[in-house]
Length: 397
Ligand code: C2E
Ligand code: CA
Ligand code: CA
Image (cartoon, rainbow, N blue to C red; front, side, top):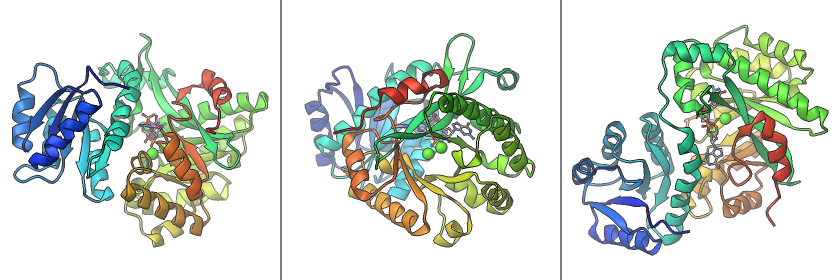
């Protein structure tokens, strides 16, 4: 794979490391490389470009303006299409940076630990191609609140599905429902552009109900065709505050003749920890009714063992930022190993999300992870293509 047309920038105060990064990029075929000797210099250079570079590699630890501040400027001023965080810092800190950038709409391809090597660089740059298809979907969606509300009410916001594979059998055993806004003009809007708005506008419960309906409907179709899978649905923290949710979810399942055991509700680690008091009662009731409960984005919140053991989770999903590239990065691998260990001790099923490479797949299999989800297996697809995606899957040799 060559990236001849790629425009890149390296922001690194250490001259030797900067030259090294430029050279490694050159070896991978990237010849247009801008350089910034620190955060301020980088912003100055970036503001002079007619078109923003495809990717900026930013060292976090720099004197003067550090990488974190630099990235937040890049994000706010739309000075680059994506960034890669380069650092020797701990994964939790890297993760915070990634989240901050994403919140400003900047694509973070990933983080790479120092020292930079050709393999690490290649792995993270490969993600640019992965995002090309998404780019096409992602004509910056412009819409009014009313249009969004109408879209939800009118059924334009639907669930797409991403298959999950059990390592032991190599078979598809589940799928996660992910919200997509299918607009009448044929464009598809990703959830990061509208889920936070729906939550803010008090429409989170409607969204969850819609996703549950869709998940049940497509599961029924799979059941009918002899494909037995579980379905996972994301639940907003705000929806956890609604005491009527448990009964409503149960009613939706009953209408579709689906057992709660075949449905897993995913709640992000950070939302459970901040809204724990609110949501605990509901979570307990859902568990009593038989629903599976998954702790999503694990590793990005700051739950303690005590908190975790108090909540009746059945599954732990390791955040993709730790999974992606873990076979190359000892610190990420350590987070994955520790999470798997903890999950085993608490009796939870483990899911790794963001599995993009065979190497990461193999490492996870060796570490005893239960389930994999990621682009290696399939991207999220519309409900009508789920069975096709399941049929296409071949376990790596
Ligand atoms: P999430 O729950 O962590 O979902 C996983 C996200 O990672 C999905 O993005 C999925 O497309 C993406 N993904 C899956 N495999 C890979 C991979 O191998 N590499 C990479 N780079 N990405 C991968 P998506 O669909 O854009 O969803 C983003 C987030 O939006 C979700 O993160 C979830 O937090 C939220 N979301 C999606 N649907 C819903 C929903 O119905 N309700 C709520 N409350 N939130 C939702
Ligand atoms: Ca999820
Ligand atoms: Ca996640």
